Length: 314
Ligand code: TXA
Ligand code: MG
Image (cartoon, rainbow, N blue to C red; front, side, top):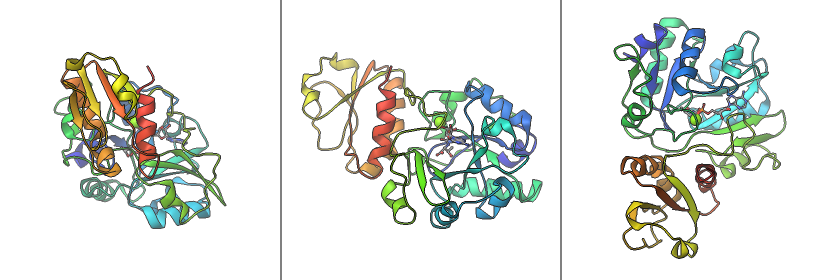
């Protein structure tokens, strides 16, 4: 069903290993325009093109830096997006008129199945443009129900499709790397950690965890509830109305009396996996405040801290 909808120029929300994406065929201008409309996204925010595998690089990139080749060999399919010089003919609507294009190959079995169907229908150079399936600035969905809650009123029933692939494994978005010939810079932290990347390529430290992509606004990933950051000690001094306050914190953080505990992850991976669902749950419950105790700045903890820091900026 998703293959038919996409081939017809309509949209399909698709599961990936990170978060759900709102997909349209990258070569169809009408589909890309609708993605921007449905998301309420400004035109100067480029989208990621999802491709079947590394053989697609020749269709999308004018040149492939050695670092990109290495990383793709190790981490594709998986939660890594590479930014490379775009091939002639890649539409400005996808790249927001930048000279580069962001490419990723998802490991989700349903996403791969859809791409295989599209390769049969439209040929090997097919790509799916898919930003996260949320309204602009809000929390990315990690379930099909989350997509429906976010975008249901903007999608066309009986035309657009939401493909249910269960809860996403990773829970935060892919890591975006800007690939130079001799080093790479992290533009958005995510599912693949800096430590993992550093085993294969030279990391440009200037990048660090700072987001330099156009979508990397200071305030992003926001639920309706107000997000307040805390640590184990400052938690006790926060003045809040207990009944309308939720807590997101590692398992070893105790819950203040009458606060609603939204999650208690034992590991950073579990924290990432459940984070966006917990923020959505806070809104569903009508909580006005979510207090979050950050995980240590290690591994995927860096991506979690980045998202929560942005969520906390009003
Ligand atoms: O995990 C993910 O990456 C998810 C799933 C659906 O694949 N997608 C996702 O897409 O997070 P989106 O559109 O929500 O975020 C894409 C980010 C934006 O911040 C955008 O600015 C950046 O990628 N981006 C896209 N093209 C770029 C380019 N040519 N140069 C720099 N940044 C780019
Ligand atoms: Mg997004």
